Image (cartoon, rainbow, N blue to C red):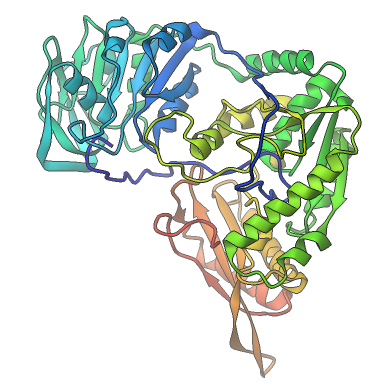
Length: 558
């Protein structure tokens, strides 16, 4: 992040993946060729209240955008290659230059159009962004003798504007191996560390600032205040970005766009598709048609719960397609996790398209696509960020389903979507439910997926969730679930030898899934869960607990 490809371990930082059009368990359109007939933008932000975040390759750029939005100011991530003309057209109140994996003196290092510095718009550079400002304004950046990674004490030399109301020293989070050797003309140092003589600078006449550390991460004390000082004290923004206003505007735009046509939505029962259904139903009522595909890979009673909530309680048009045989038939003999995902995505597309074609006057498809989905699937910023993974609900529609796309949350983060759901009256059982993988239990049954193995896992998983909820920990952890392993072990039950399955329990803490740590569940709770699984789930004689963090492991086993 302003050094040589060092990765920053963020405390509970990151996000979960893939929401929107999918089966009941979330089966993805993964890696499918898709096409849009039209993309419907259903929200326009007042341009005078935009902070642009220029992406220079940091995988955590979106954390900056999230922190700004938490202060009720709209932020948008754009490519570092954005032109002066494009910036003038947007009329942002401020620019933030993100971190990045390269050094400014590397061959091919991303640079900024120097004319941007002449626009008179306040600028804040973060890590690589700070070094870039220095280098492009005739300062000097070199490799430092001593690198700084992790928690570092920051000494504030000047507590005006950017550091107003901050104490004389705070703990900040560093991740760099370069240092500023010479400040550009007109710049002054405003903070330092024991190893970095210039850890923050300012050119107050031009309203250009830079910080070597990362204020967007939770490790930096008062980091949110530093960003708030920039957007309010320096940029002059007002806290106008609220979800109730977003709902009113979006409902009006959807209503006008759809007219007398119909909208199809793949409802999974997850947060994103559920909130999308509520929002669009508020706009067009019974012209929304939801499709829930029961692929046989769901948790216990999942299909019935979704039907009861959306069809029974909210009185929505909901078609439940029972396609268990289709999915399990195609998964027979398949053990490779990536092949499982492809099969599930492909089969879901077939089932969904077939059902969609039977809905007369359907002209639109709605998806719960989130901003991080777009960022991570397509690197839409045009920046040097790696594409982390392909999201099934990003990129368009199957060629044989010629519908226009409505993505009301395409520029929102999950916490914002949850706020909308609460505003619209969705229960916490949906809004606060733990993430569930797109391919469902298929990737928690390690090895071949069969009816018998799914039933064992379903029952074991149910007991994990029941006991975690009884302990009052369900909303305290990110995910808690069971995995059925592809091995059997010897055991003793009733003085008789058994040779049966092993179930692993996975319980992790995180903010949104990019990094995670295993949860130290009370031994008593682990004992209760293990006893219930072994005693109540036929075919299991051993339970183990996964104590791996992410990284190096992933949350899901497949």
